Amino acid sequence: MTPNNAISSDYEDGARIAALAEKYAGAVPRYTSYPTAVEFSDKTGVDHWKFELQQEFSCDAENTISLYIHIPFCKNHCFFCACNKTASRDPADVTRYLDAVKREIASYSALLGRPAAIEQIHWGGGTPNFLTPAEISSLHDAVVSAFGRVLPNAEISFEADPRTLTREHLATLAALGFNRLSLGIQDFSRPVQEAIGRVQPFELTQDIIAHSREQGLNNINVDLIYGLPLQDVSAFDATINQVLDLQPNRVALYGYAHVTWIKRTQLLLEKHHLPSPKERIALFCAALKRFTRAGYDYIGLDHFALPGDSLAAALREGKLNRTFMGYTTHKGSRLIALGASGISILPRILVQNSKDLDNYCRTMNSGEFAVERGVIRTGTDQQRAEIIDALLCQGRIDIRQFESRWQIGFADEFASALDALQPMVEDNLVRLRPGVLELTALGRLFARNAASAFDAYLDKARKNAAPVFSQAV
Image (cartoon, rainbow, N blue to C red; front, side, top):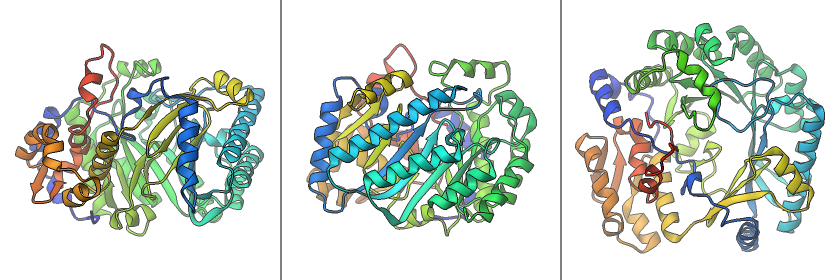
């Protein structure tokens, strides 16, 4: 799909969009993988992972990989956050954890047996800048020395909380070769910030971005969230004005996931008004129009990027990918996740490390990988994953190319999915043409719904007594 920053006219019919939001307001996976993590089980474990890893890398002369490093520590808990994190204040906990991650790094290096070419490194959390600059430097050096060379065009990114990010942190990141900084904002409205337990003045964020650019960290991402308590279109528009003043290269505009069965601290937000599906999509559409009119390309789902950014280039070139790191610029990349709760991806297998910090550290200290659960992907799983990825990343599926690659008939193999998409076809959200299935401009707002038609596990997951997915819109 070619990015288009002049599509705002497709989002002017607020009444129709609101009606569609109500119609398609079910709970749907975010599809950062397929099968989703709900399908992981302890029947797939460390032995399966090591076998698939060795098989995958034994036949690849380039040995390219992407790395994700999870830092679970936070100074404080934000009420809205459902990430795997801990608010430890004991330096010994950090030292123990970093030692375990370094053991994991060394174990992967020994298992692969030869250097790998790193095309992407992303530090997430938690709050990676909870670590001291010296700790960041030590861990980064361990990664680079163990895995081998970092490719010249590699993206090395770091998530940070501006409230605790120092100039020394920024200088260290620049010296180590980090080239992208991702800053959490969520919303600049003071009432919203107080409701979610995260007060962060605009001036503080502005100052951090200025210092980042002084250090040569010119690729700036910012994270916003819509659907938070007390948000409305007018106040959120003021936040967007301030974000546009900051001129970030990318904007992630995530829908708040109210998943109280995962994080009970989110119950604190229920004392305030939480936007309805109609209100949520109004917030998103208003933001979408503002960002596209300001020159940002709508990448898909919840991301925007300036036309010169590598994410926009990846979309234009058909190289956009979606993993547990979100949208990435490397199509078909193999992902190794380091640290507690990290999820690794290879074509035939997905695995997750233990979420529990004590268990993760104990297992790594024993000399074994801390893989706790996963799923082996069948051929059909891989086919459906490719379709879902194409819808979310490119907004279309080239059916003829797909049939040629997999040697199957698309209409016969996915007849039930095409039937499930029929309401979206009738609502002009999905278009079927000879050899092509594509989302319309308005249909891109409901891409997760369209992708879910190809999810063979969804009906089973929905029959569970407990909820498992967040709202689609």
